Length: 114
Image 1: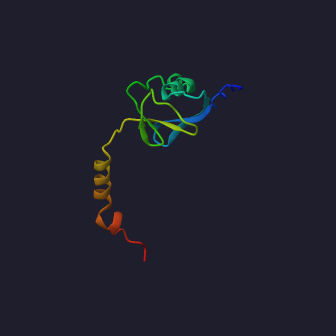
Image 2 (image 1 turned 120 degrees about the horizontal axis):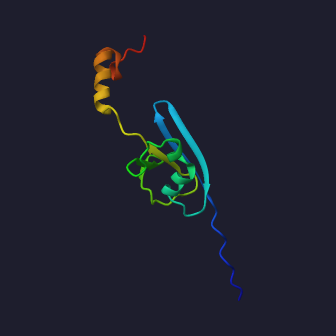
C-alpha cells in the first residue's frame, strides 16, 4: 500500500485595512502561508513602519467587523481591520445632529419634498 504525502496547504490571501483619519483608508493585500495569524499579517504588511504612533498591542482589531485577536488564525479572503479609537460618542453625535437639524429635518420626520 502506497502512502501519499499530504499536499501542502494553500496560502491564504488576506487584506489589512487601516483608516488613520476620516475618509482616508490604507489597504495592504497579502499572500501568507497557511495557518498565519492576525499578528503575522500586521507584521508582514508594515503598518507599524508607516504609522509608528499606532499601538497594535492595544488597538481594537476585527475580521469582517467581528472582534479578532493577534493570535487568531486567518482564512482565505479575510479582511483584517484596525480600528481607530472613537473621538466622539456616537449617541451624543446623533443627538447633536438632531438638535441642529430640528425635528422636521431629521429621521422619520423629514419631509420628502412633496
